[in-house]
Length: 405
Ligand SMILES: Cc1ncc(COP(=O)(O)O)c(C=O)c1O
Image 1 (cartoon, rainbow, N blue to C red):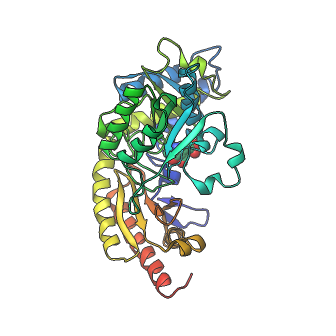
Image 2: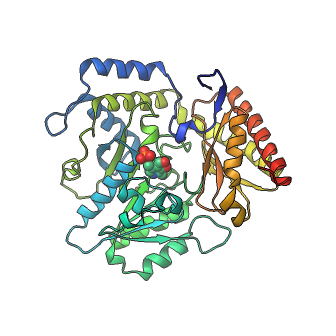
Image 3: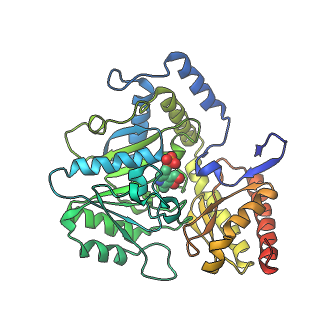
């Protein structure tokens, strides 16, 4: 529960921006931050290593398992995506490979490189001039009117049409967030893209900023497919919102024998000991309290309940997503979407009913309301979430029906 300064209570149905995975004010995390703050709060990685970062990397690499060798730290998910893109370019330096292929819709961050590979027209508005770097971008869209994300065939037809020897990297979110509200890239497509990259030498980058560290009921969004992307991009749930940190987890195939932490340079605050101590405490808490399986179980229940709500309202579509990264799709005429998107209306009605949910999608087809509570949500709060969402949806339905606001 979240209480505002006027004493109003809200059920947190979206973990802030799908980031506060273990809730606020967890004593273990506050204590870890406080302990670290008394030891050292800054140590530049070009001069010193620091213990929280060393320990955090060991934990992250124990979670990813085989196939990864190094973790490069940043202050955000966007910067972690920038790091992955830079590493892909370094990896292919001198080979003429400079095409990055991503999908539409997608969202990879607000910094210039990350936004350049994002299939998110509203967030790119007025910025196209900034987004035409040396790397060439290709985007793959679904060829089917009723599907949000491209199929393996859609991907391969674009990839094979261009010269595969020019492709530096393929980038995707295993389960979509801000751009596609829980739309999933299926296992067959993930495996097919891994196979394409193995065959052609391109790198596979999985953007796990939203999906990573338990949110989808597995440690990562790609876990289910058993593939090993070359670069895993993370943020958000890594520190659960306690302090800013992102990380790019580097696979063994990327620049073998070279320290990527040095090549990627990073930022003044990268590898900050305080942020690393917070992240370490969050991952330890996640593991000790079995929150990954909790996300899977509560997510399965919540998804069934969302399906029931969706069945009873003509403009809702069946829920999509996995674990506690869920989105309820919305059916709306594109012209009406352009003026009054229904997802915003539902989010506003939810707020009035004491529930925080998140609007997502780039157009009428992908719009949704995301329902992504913290992994620690209690059973009673799940019931409150469902009741308040039901009320918000029926208020929006009435408004929609009478053509009101
Ligand atoms: C999939 C994905 N990638 C990257 C980002 C960017 O992360 P940040 O906002 O921490 O820069 C986000 C943020 O929403 C995201 O959902």
